[in-house]
Image 1 (cartoon, rainbow, N blue to C red):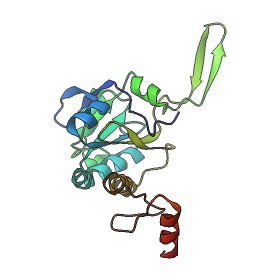
Image 2 (image 1 turned 60 degrees about the vertical axis):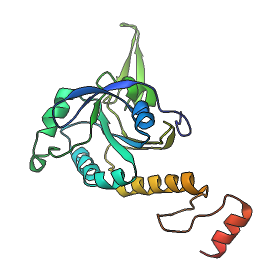
Image 3 (image 1 turned 180 degrees about the vertical axis):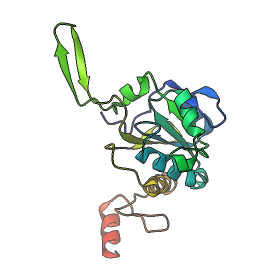
Length: 212
């Protein structure tokens, strides 16, 4: 079930930062309390291959997100202790040393289950044990949620495990949503900051299409 247009789930999750501090993060409260947008990006596992490239890419763009009044939060189903070990592993050894934004440690999978982003491809009922056996790793896909200052989700997307994300696309989406918030105009295909937007009516569409 899509969350776009709805409030993000109101749940606190364990988190870890580069200082080794364990604390609770409620993404909904972070957005509302700080009057900021939030990008929450999920990745499958610590100490893997595509994942560190994404975490470093978000770190490199952290200043751009901050310019846009946006908090960056990473998340997986690893424990806080595993996060801390990875945060203390050098970049040239596949680690994420230098990452400064918080990482959710949803090891009980409460939030991931609510978001329905776990890799559980199928289930089989076992009559002997009266239980279900699930196929898949029970880790998350590369799911991304953009949340506004009121805690409403305005974008969600899910990539399969091997496909890394384009961080610049999330900056573009945040710019587009901020433009809509500020100006009341809508943003057409391939819109970028500084380009022409349009009014959400037939005349607006006609004027835009005739000039592009």
